[in-house]
Structures are given as structure tokens and as C-alpha cells.
Length: 233
Image (cartoon, rainbow, N blue to C red):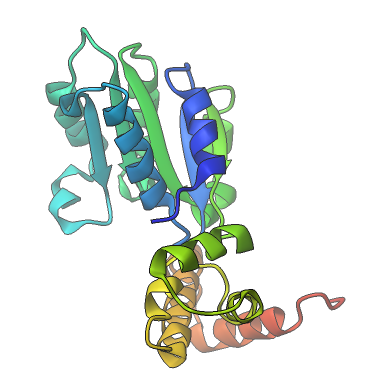
């Protein structure tokens, strides 16, 4: 697993500050993994496991907590008001009226709050305005080439630096592509990237904006992607 040192350093510096830590980024860029890495650092620093609450709202077992008041009750039952509690909510936008919940937990001095939210949601709503003065955004991008090299080293692939760079330029820096490279599964990588692209288009853009024609929207999207760097009127 590649340590996301730049993002982890920001989380370390912001730990226990009176701010909501908002992790943003495209799907599959590594937001959930960043949470796991930071939670392990909390444990290594002496934080009791019982004082770390972590929920991913894309997991079906958390479906019963997708109402703000139910989630609030669940958190309040688990926290220890005499200690600092670290609360992590992954893909918080799936919770109905989650803004109210975030506000409620933010004012409690025994809770240090961390949330992830998709870029599409964060940028297309008034969430940033609602949280003004109470949050700091930590963007997570796919791997840089430096991180990609570290991932290659961890996998013990036998390739030269230029071959690795060719893979990086061909497939991009989504972390999961490194797992698919084992055995030279280039075709599977392209299928995976296509799946991620489709999920972003369908869930983060089309569904949220109630696009009526999927075919027309995909044609326009692909045209725009093919025209990167070109002037569009």
C-alpha cells in the first residue's frame, strides 16, 4: 500500500483542530484508503480503537444509518464524552440531510470529524457555503508518478523506469490499476478505467442532474474528453 504522505501530513497537522476535515476527490482515487492509513496512525499514537468510529455509506450494512437523526443517535451511543473521539464518514453525501448532522457533531468538543465527499457533489451544491469557516478541504488525486513508482516497487515488477512511465501515461494513476498490471492485463485495466468513467458519469453527473438522454450526454462527454487542450466555443 502506497502511503499518501502529502495528504497524511495535512491530516496530522489538522488533528484535534476545531475544523471539519473534508476529503474530496474523484471515485477510486484513494480517499477511503487515506482514511485507513490515518486511522492506523491514530492507533499507533495510542488512541483507543473504541474512540475511532468509521462508516462507509456505500456499504450495504450501513444502509440503516442513512437518515441523519438515526446516524446521530448511533454516533452518540458510541462516543466517550470524557475522551476525544475520531469520527470518519466516507461518502457522507449518501446520508439524507447530512448537513444537519455534520453541524450537530461539529459543535461537540469531544468529536474530531473527518468526511469524504465526491467532487461532483461538493462542487455542485451549497455544501461549501453551508460549512464556510468550519472546514478545510484536502483534495485527493490519483497517484503522481512518484507514488506510482513506489507502487511498482511494492509489487516487485521487473520493469525499467521508462517502461513504468509508459504504463503511467497509458493507464493513468488510479491505484487499482497497479493490481491489474500483474500478468500484463492491459485489457482489463482499460475495462476497469471504463467502468470508473461510467460510474462517475452516471452516478455523479447524470443521476444528480437528472439528465434525460444518456446517449446524447455520453456523446457530448466523450467529445469534450477528446478535445482536451482545444478551444471550444
